[in-house]
Length: 294
Image (cartoon, rainbow, N blue to C red):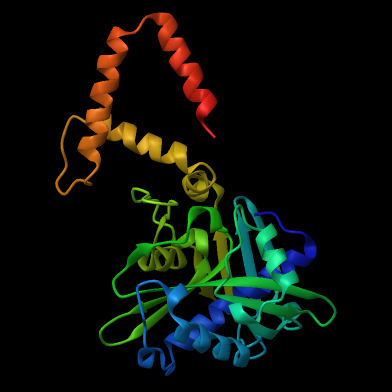
């Protein structure tokens, strides 16, 4: 992650802010258990969007935070931020998808890799002088993992509020989208959707987001995110490598994916065809395949 000075302070505010609201939601009555959830995916849960529209509008700053410092560790670099310098930031509006203007939709579209889709929530933030916008993704699950957003729509460092709907209580975790990704990519029936997991985000927060002596410390280690970034930037290569492992495997696993044998049969047909080809035909096939790859 590389930020300009202004973006760095804004991002620091958001790190403290989302940590703060997560604690408020998990340690005080939150009414989330009273909500009607329509499906496994929060992007169809209008009640959830309205709830967080109201909650974030009310809890819009970090003025009540007891934290004194924020430490951000990025690989070998370490940055110390005084929390007081972040208290000038405030969320002045929380926009629902239907409230977005044409210009706001255009800004969001330009930040994505494909066609425009509405964010779940869009935050308007000020530092007293400048105005900033941040999109927020809402995810909810009864168990743990669910299909994530379409891979073209994923922003690795978009903020996520993840809700776990247990039998007795509702638990909330917050963080960057990339820290929810389980590195599993289900067989794509349409656009690939990397799997996200509530426990994955919880585990990341437990390991790399800690509070001690009124100081919030958050770590970002490039190597940890390397495979996830590769999945997002070149999912075709990621899937191809996974399928190659299936072909090379000498043992059949329990509860294999339904398409594993289809991949093996394709490999057998390709081997048989390869045996009948001349070296020139093999080179022509390689050339044509490379030409067709987008």
